[in-house]
Image 1: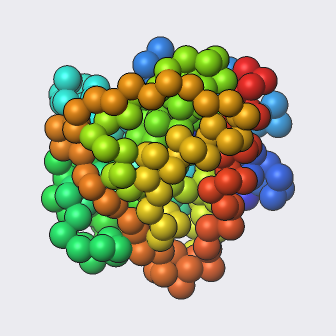
Image 2: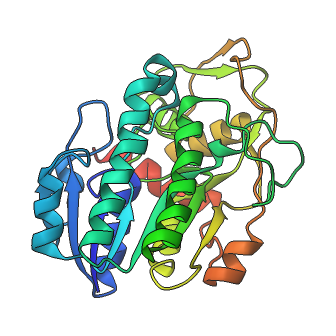
Length: 307
């Protein structure tokens, strides 16, 4: 299958490209290598065709006309909550208008399906745990809002144009090539600082818990979604909460050293516990997380040691 991966030089997108290539798919990458984004030349799979292009540009029409993708995995995005609050107009321009451009061209050039990188940020503060797909979507940042809006556009294009979709609502994704500015950046930040012997900062009391899912497992979900889960929005997490303090201990053990901890107050909007139900992804895709936290952290630490 010919698969176009937007944002395919970024953290998650590049791992998906690697999985697609390994599975025998013909792949192409669209990435604009924005300086505040996650796209890196070093992440580009050499067996994939690279188009340096912004998803909002007319140039994207040429990409679709030339490559004629049967499926598109849409990972290109403004991915920072902080940037979205600083500049919500820019966030919407990329995450909504950019998506519409991709969907419009996919419909025009006969693409069969879109798989979309959505986010658990669409849920906002948990009303109950674990968070399942029926949980109210009450996002608390412009980033979360644009990801939620994107899911509605996917539904519209399916109904109006026959363009299939699966949206994957990622938990806190971590692993090699991780961008420390992303939603699970704490692991990349801690790994880099502990390797360098520099102090780390722990906000609140460090007992707040998030659902950290390894990027290799996420890429596998994206691969499975190419021909499964039509018309669904699915959580991709582990169903297990891990505290910041536990992350610190695990990363220090993987590095083989510890560093000073600087404590800071609770950040505004920080959630105490956020864990996701993942039974729907198992039912619709046949997917489940396979990588233990210790194995994933070891792989992440080894990556940062070598870069």
